[in-house]
Length: 168
Image (tube, rainbow, N blue to C red; front, side):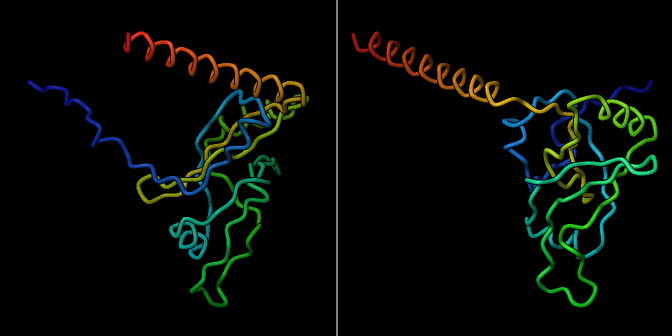
């Protein structure tokens, strides 16, 4: 009789984040996210292992039925030689065909774009989290900041009230 083995936290793959695009959640309304692999050269992987990358201006673009990651900055590997890579070259995303078709279809709707949220290692392989996003307008950004500030003030007031109640 076979028993099912329970998955523990040790069985989950370790995720080492190299770079994240924190500003993307402020500038865009994230509708969907998906994990994709990247086609990289050796010096790019070595540079990423040193924890160096920037996703700030990055985006994904469809060309000939494939998705490509554009404008992501991976600096040259310090110990590299003539085999070093270009820092902002176009990199191919690795995903299943049905995922690619779904993202291309949704990204062609008005106001939608594909942006990278984070770049990380999973079991020694570089992965990127791609988001289908819609740009926020300026007043939406101000409203989100105002809501966040109001929530902080409310939390602060509640904690002060609780402290005062405990002192009495």
